[in-house]
Image 1 (cartoon, rainbow, N blue to C red):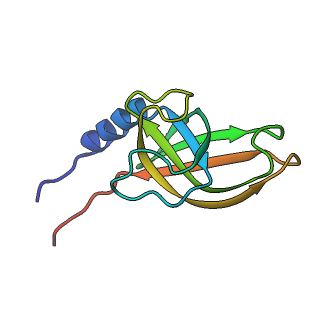
Image 2 (cartoon, helix red, strand yellow; image 1 turned 135 degrees about the horizontal axis):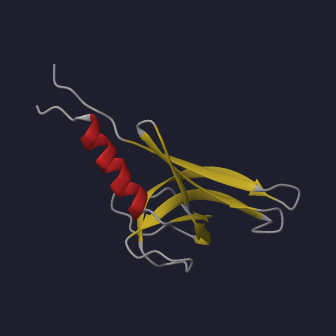
Length: 121
């Protein structure tokens, strides 16, 4: 098995950082490996991206007056032509959440994507 160098790992992180553009939340089920969209997507925002060691942290915040009165069941990040418009681009990764949002709080969604080095010993 080949060694993944620090340069290779950083290159992968940099490529992903430039590809992922948006975060969406919805009231549908958990995405599957073949999902291209987020089930029941209701809201979408541009993503904030940070690289933290061997992980990309993708985030978006909805303030106190956005998206209230809904139980959110899933969240995901989007790439490949995604815009602020729901249904654009493709789902990069997604997961289940369980958040009831009301006007007394903001909501910050954080999605971590790791680049892990595997070894065959």
